[in-house]
Image (cartoon, rainbow, N blue to C red; front, top):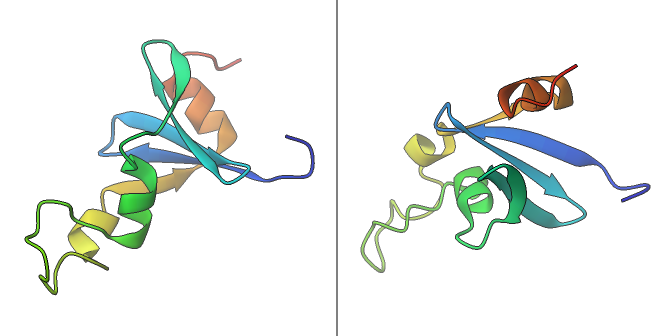
Length: 84
């Protein structure tokens, strides 16, 4: 979308995702699909859904935050096989 920044991410060193226009997508099965399980945002905020309700480790969990890395557009395209 014009005028909106797109950020690309690598999750667990294997899954490529992007945040564009406030929406998140994962590159799966050869196409960009909506991130319906919140894989990107959960990791950016350190949300660990496996923690029990009320756990102090459910939010801002640094282990979860370390599972995602921001990458360049060029690296994302290389990883999904669309590099030039």
